[in-house]
Length: 153
Image (cartoon, rainbow, N blue to C red):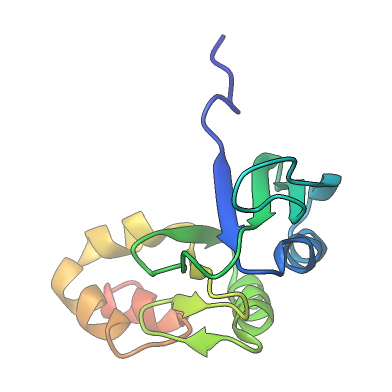
């Protein structure tokens, strides 16, 4: 049986890894801090190192200093079952960050997220051109408007 944690995710923060992990675990179900320690060697020696789970997936966060920054080239996708769920995650994750387009945002730590309907593939498959045109006008996604654009609402 494959190991679901064979490939993990490590997030390099300048100096707020523990704060970010605490914030993220407060938002997502089935989430927890597994450990907090310090980096024993290397350029981040003595800085925080945190291991945490988000919705059952393991992540690592390290306070590595200002050498690297997050970019939207890598983002985390939050698949939401309802408009209320989209609204909740959008509000929480964008608070103190930056709202983008098409469900994308950067949180207060600079991490990029996509907050989207879980059935986005189905919505896009209905009428890709009209759904994409509607999507391009949105910051926070409006499921009803996408359904209407796809001819289902």
